Structures are given as C-alpha cells and as structure tokens.
Length: 111
Image (cartoon, rainbow, N blue to C red; front, side, top):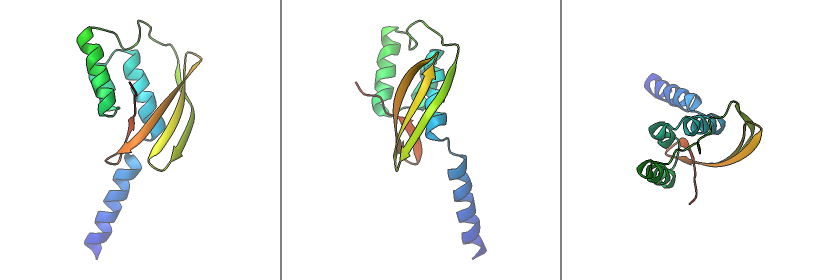
C-alpha cells in the first residue's frame, strides 16, 4: 500500500511541475524572438517543427529581424486538452493555440 501511495504522490508532483500553457507559450515566443530554432522546436507540435525547420533551411530569421523589448502573458483559457494564450509582444497581441500531447502542452502552428 505504501508503494502505491508513493507512486501516486510522485505522479502528482510531475504533473504539478509540468509547464502551464502560458509558460509554454511565453517560452516559445521568447525562443522565436531570439531566433533559437532548437529551443522553439521544443514547444511546438510536429507541424510547427516542420515550419521552423523550413525557416532554418531557408535562412529566414524566426523573429522577422526584430527582437521585442517586452513579452507578457495577457490571458490564458484552458478547455481540457486545448488552450488559447494571448501574449503581448511590445504591445501587439498574439494569440497562440496549444494542445496537450503526451501530457505536455505544445503550441499548435498552422501552415
């Protein structure tokens, strides 16, 4: 019985320590802002990885040549395994859709 309790407690700690949708979205935007292709790929679904890889191969910067001064989460809405996060990038609002894959939140980029 003690073994089962320990397993449940450890599982809850892992879930509690997993980044929230707003954390993932902000980390992704910061990676893009600094043209960190590998880091940005950590936060996206497979479709997003393909898009980032294409940009890398074409030599295109992820940040369109601009590094923002201020990035902050404005709003987070979670509905089961889907989330929408609004982020202010230098005052311009960006909306990111996220999905939960294998227990982790990922930014879902569309072509």
